[in-house]
Length: 508
Image 1 (spheres, rainbow, N blue to C red):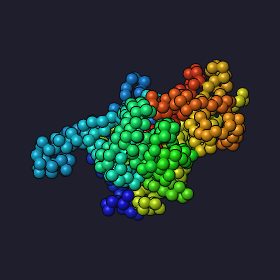
Image 2: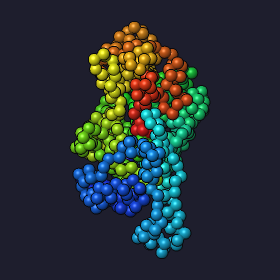
Image 3: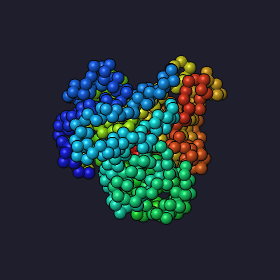
């Protein structure tokens, strides 16, 4: 991906350029038409002109998931994040006046429609709270097309390639990002709707018929599907790329997918991750990289989004290449708009601005593994005090474990008693003929070395049993961590893995 000529290449110049775009965006588009941010800026005595440096961004209070929760009076704050145009304000824009003079009032009205009329809706998955809808206008769909086409280019796609988009057909960012990006890039992308629409058999029939060069989808579903393809003797020697989103996909997961591809006759492929979330209405990707050197990170679109990294506890900004929580601000969105949105996603590398060592792009890059702050939980395993368990680390342990195919972590209460101790049950399918006793011993050791607890039980299942347990083909996302504790302990059932659009791509 070449850096567009209008993007400054120096990091400080790029941030100044982004801040100038932000000031214009806030002044002309967000503050006049956003009920939430209009009130906020007035309350904080803020104006766009005060935002002259990266440090000034701290003047804008964070937005988070709690801001979308219904009020005690039944009010719906989600509506206050949607830009609702005031024609009187719009008509005073210099650009509007010039357009009216040159093209007439009808062209002005059509421009307002394209900019602000809702045309598409996606929503969060709603596993830990009610789903939150996000509105797209024609302008947002243009952003989706531009960003999506860039992602296809960064992944090394060509127009001659045939691709299967196996993200679930739903009001979910990943599917629509892949769809609009492929149409803009100009390549053949067939949306199967994932397992929920055609089922595993239907997707396998399409693989036989289309013989795709690229598979796009969620890691767990693609793993199940490719295992089925291998067992049926399907060959796919022309497969060149697997593009992942919607769930985390650490090195172990990517290694397993490459091994399955090799069994289908494709010995060398790129397995690339994307990252995105519903609130961004965008996604980012890695470029093809040398496996020995490691990924260069997710390449951000600096004209469409301003990314910050902050300390997850204090909210203070982190420096270049320092780990922290990802904070998102759009620079061109319409419809639903969030400013300084705290994603709850933490990256262990940080934000980098130097030239990408693989593709040469001079764009900000999010480097490292992404995890969710909400996945660090206190479990009452002992009688005296709770134990903090980092499920992000456990996911990486299991995804990277040898001999493990797919898995699910289940939280229970002993004897189904809300007042009893918590139990951690690991459900596993084997990837090879490793003995159960040996694998049980290895997994117990890995658990203890990472989080200093042992699972109460390790249970082995067939591939078909695990597909049913994870909801493969029936759920929007495969359930890899599930909370079956009685609701009396205040727990939320159906814990989701971190989102990412496509990883995400986040929330995807």
